[in-house]
Length: 219
Image 1: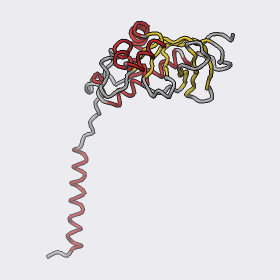
Image 2: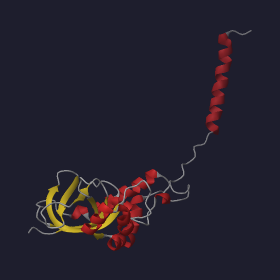
Image 3: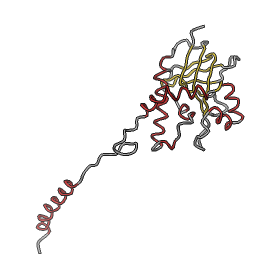
Image 4: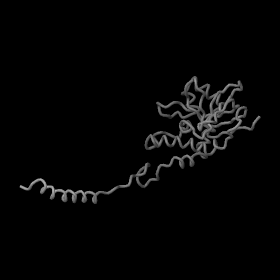
């Protein structure tokens, strides 16, 4: 019987050859695109938003959005009724209500030190803030996406795509509207916003995400 060294001298070349055959037989297949297989275009949320923004998103918000005082009054007493009238009644059951709004008023406070800059707006003229408006460049939440009744979670391949689509709304709003807003001496100036907000805690100011926004000149 051959000793262990002799056996290994025969086995090692054989095993090496088998490994080589295995590697040459293996093929690396391309990963299909995120939408519908290898021949479908890759998922591009930024391009999707660009394509629907002017023809669908803005007209929807203009038609569906109500004056902020009316929307918020109904939202605090009957969120489902407010959602049916001013938002997306077909939302996921476990998601909060989100409403399209038109907001006008005077800026009573501003925070422009953060990338998630905001302005506080007095809508009813009592000198106190009624809503907080995001002016970017960093914009939180997915209120714009969630207010649209023609956008549904089931239209997307997975949760990641749906989340990226929501983020793309904020990026496009900053690109087309928010980045053009002034950042200095904002208190006392008028603000006009078309956008959406998600119903949150009664202790917090409603956080409005604009699709369109204007800030008036210094008084």
